Image (cartoon, rainbow, N blue to C red; front, side, top):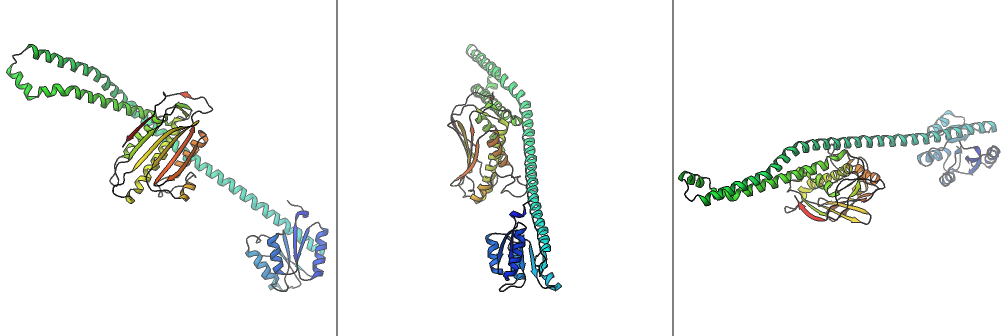
Length: 444
């Protein structure tokens, strides 16, 4: 608590004798003293250098003590300064009026030095205790607010992680169940293709060495259009083989995405993570009643394997791409008839960092929204449509976990999210994939 040497007391009185008596008594008690001869001067002086306590005479020329007190209490900057009225009046009505204006006490004239010092000491102690209590309440409130905010973040983070983990487990289970029969089909198609080729060759030899064909055989061959079957059967098997191969590719992407609960650093192919996320979101990308299908342009650079947490990075891709689809859905009704919704994904190496830019041609984003975009619980979506934590968690994953940057910028009618992460992290990762080559693709 401050000592008396640091306390400033302002005496407001138009009588020089009263000023001299009070100044001497307070100075002897080691208080710093300031004086003013009228209310207007006192208000100016308080604004310039606020005291810790004011001794205010009631009867003064110009504005009286009551009006001076009213103006001081009406100003938030000076409202908390304790005011003690000094008066020769003993009327109860005047005392009640002064206290109702915010004064804390009265001192009657002629002054008793011991009484003045005792009242001043008590009210200064109360003043400092109130200030200390206010400060402690504010500090405690700030701590509780921060703790609540951290708890809310942690809860949402746990929910998000649990969602991604559950989704990953579900996807992994589906991929595993599909993988076995597809491998069986794909493996047998290789033998089926060889068997069909052998049978067709056998039929060719029969045709060459048996010129006289039984009429029934000839009739059936014409009925089933044998020449067409002979030409189309290899193509049919080939298309089945291609289809099975595509299913195997989808299963591979599902397995890549299913590592959503992995939080350890490993060397991975970023492009496979993006592709697997797009596969999971493919149903949302398809055409809806209110818009055409979303064109997804992937312009992949020559990225090496990147040190990162694959599951968490997939979560970032999911959040940003989901928001992009939401933005395109919301803006569809305001776009011209020939508008084509589009998401573009660019990857490149920039020095020691990998850069991933995800943009969409939905509605532009106001600067006021950009400023708060990565704040926890901030969302522009209707109530119940989002937690406002997706981008906040994504920012945390990129900046804190991966020591990178994530920012948003607006270029014309395009909103871009730019992710930059170091290619190499301080912790040695586990190799996962082979290096990918640069290529450009367009998908729907």
